[in-house]
Image 1 (cartoon, rainbow, N blue to C red):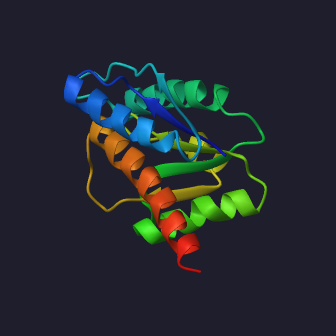
Image 2 (cartoon, rainbow, N blue to C red):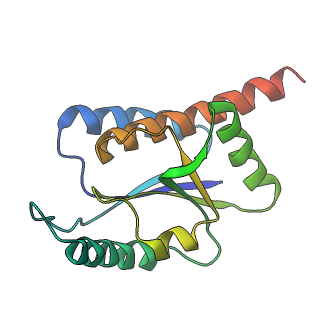
Length: 159
C-alpha cells in the first residue's frame, strides 16, 4: 500500500522534522510512505472573508493538482468524523481490502481546506475539536498511521 500525506506548509523546526522522519522510517516496514509539502499562501492579519476564501481556493487548487483519480482521500477537518486509533486502523485496513492501494491524507493550512477539496475527499476525519498547528497535525497523523499498522499487525497475530 502507498500512503501519502499532502500537507500545506513546510516543517520549519528541526524537532517537527525529526519526529515525522522517525515515523516515516518506522512505516517503511509496512508501506510506501511519502509526504508532499505544498506552498501555503501568506495570510494577512485581519484578512477579510473574501481574502480568506481566495487563499483557500489557491491552496485547494494546489492540493487537487496533486491527487490522482485512483487515490482514496482522507482529509483532516475539524468537522470530520471523530476517530479512535482503532477506527483509523480499520479504515486503512479496509482501503487495502477494497483494492485502494493509494491512500492520501490531507492537512490544510492555517485556514483549513477549501470546500472543493473536502468534496473530493472520500472521508473527513478529525482528531478532536481542537485546532492545532499543521506541523503538529503532521506529527500526530504520522504517528497514528504508524499506530494503525501496529494495531493491524497485533490483531492479525492474535487471530
